[in-house]
Amino acid sequence: MALIGASARAGVQQGNDAWYAGDHARAVIEWRAAAEAGDAEAQYNLAQAYKLGQGVTMNMKLAQLWYRKAALQGHQQAEDNLGLLMFRQGDREGAMQWIRKSAARGEPRALYVMGTAHFNGDLLPKDWPRAYALMRRAAAAGLPQAQASLAQIETHISADQRAQGIALEATITPRQPAATYAAATPPQPAPQSAPAPVETAAALVAPQPRLQPVIPSVIAPVPEPAAVRPAASPKAPGAAPDPAPARAVEAASRPVGGDWRVQLGAFGSVDGARNAWAGLSARIAALKGLSFQTQKAGTMNRLQAGGLASKAEAERVCRAVAAAKAPCFPVAP
Image (cartoon, rainbow, N blue to C red; front, side, top):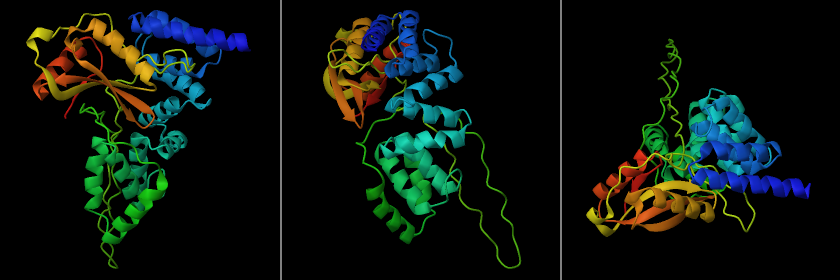
């Protein structure tokens, strides 16, 4: 068994190396062998490849299958992705067992889903104080959809319900550090509508307000395959760029030295972020001369590059990174 485990871990690392080199198909071959041998990190990586459609044809059913295999082994990022993918794909009831686990760890997207469910009384009992508490946590982590929903909730709940929610917030889950989220347009939610209110002679019942759940795709613009866990090995390949050349932003023409940054992903380990930076900065001229940074956000490590003078410069860098099909968004000082 030890030999099988060592072989699987070696396959994960070989897959990681191939991914960074831009050989996504080879990475998938290596990960598949390790995944079939039972390695949870390889299973998660393979799910990510199917979800992203890199190295394989995009296939959400297979992504879900491999997320589930990893999640059943306790892989937390797989749990997070499985629950949200199932929810987006329409299996909302089945998703909730995983979303609850993610929310218990303070995962902002899961908190947002549960807050919406408690507010609407869909999938979970209607409980406005708890919905308020959960949504406050998700909004405090920087999730734009949660911030918008929180503003809606605050227009409907009573002062007593608000006070109950604030008290409850301290008991439900660890607080996540504030994060910067991509301002990309989220997928449109399935249409929802409350039943028309029934007016009777006894009472006129106002229609209950209803939140429309918009599930943000990922904390970073593109999710990254995580890595193998041995202490001596780099851990996580990110959603590395395709080998197509980026439209370079020449370092000589870019003012450097300001406080603006760009975020290039979020990784399960600092080693994974560092490896991703090495690959991206070697391939994309716009990143040359910028400073490598990581920032802890719950269980994730955000990969950021700093030293930009303005928002316009950060946006220019992100256009070049996006041309290489890698994630990027500006981060204000």
